[in-house]
Image 1 (tube, rainbow, N blue to C red):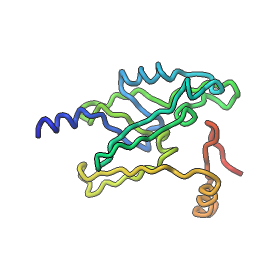
Image 2 (spheres, helix red, strand yellow):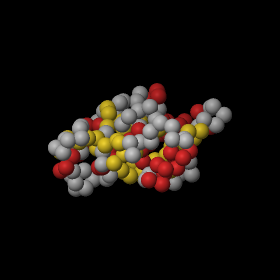
Image 3 (cartoon, one colour):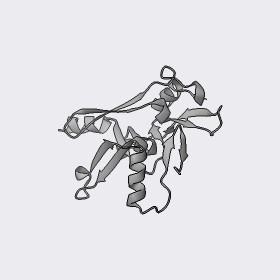
Amino acid sequence: AALIQKRRRLTPKAIFDSGTTYFTAGSGLFEQIMERLPPSKCNELTEKSHPDLHFRLRDEDDKIVDFSFSHEEYMVRSSSSEDSECRPAFMLIDVPKEHDGPSMIMGQVFNHKYVVQYDRGSGKDSDARVGVALAAHGSTQTEALRSATGGQGRVLHKTSHRWHSPA
């Protein structure tokens, strides 16, 4: 049992956090990501230069689930100008082993594509769960949000690396 516990602690973890803007990676992995996905002019990004990223996670039934992102989803535009530069949406954060490291944080970039449902259960760590599903995007969802909120505030959606408010 002690060997199994030790192995689990060394298994990399995914932390879902709505308060973190980007993906995070620890030392070593962060440098590899930045080397393989260098900043580039946004209009020069291709699937070959900046391929899809796949996060492979294991669910509570021990099933492997892939979460994929295109460069249009994981690269961040520096400005709205035609010749702006895009950088990978990653930050360097080393999660200490005593806090379940090594871990990657799946921040808002993840939450733009997937809906994350948090369930603390009884409040014990062993009862905590996270549900993840592909988010629905488009005019139908925007209109449903407007209807549900009675037109309060503005509904924002992302188009081509820029956030804007639909008319």
